Length: 71
Image: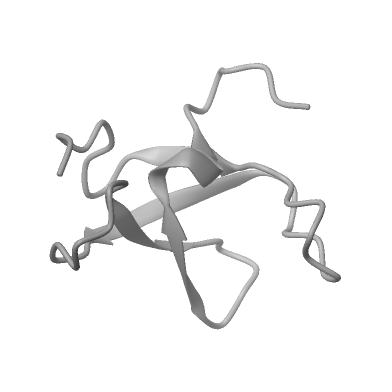
């Protein structure tokens, strides 16, 4: 497994997924924790947005740093 690039407590942006029917909220999410390896090639994280009452599980390729330009 590759080394994770994000850390617990870090702010990130969730990239839009064209396959998803529901778009994620705009703005910053917080990394709640890094999930244990499961044989996946990309690290996975639990993230949370202040305006949502739940956490999401996402792969690293679905995230961008807080200042990265996202499309």
